[in-house]
Length: 111
Image (cartoon, rainbow, N blue to C red; front, side, top):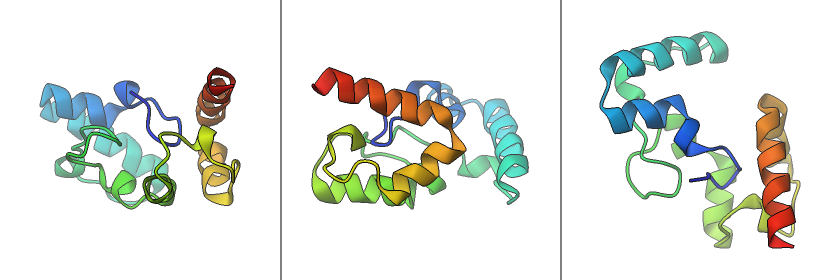
């Protein structure tokens, strides 16, 4: 299960904690991400069913400009976007190099 941007939801700590309904995992994730993002993330904010599931979304994902854009354009992945690579996606790629790898793999598959 891939998010629009290429992040692998099945490997995401927020997704894993939510699906396991594990408050220890939520707490660990909130602490790590708070330190990384230099903001306060509370364990109760760690709830996500995946970017495309239509259920609960982690608050970063809920306000994600890449996700909003893909939904508005009706595309399943940024790899299919005629504006690839846009600034919004590039900003995410700068945070996590795995996003570029994932999107590039999707582009190769889609031909």
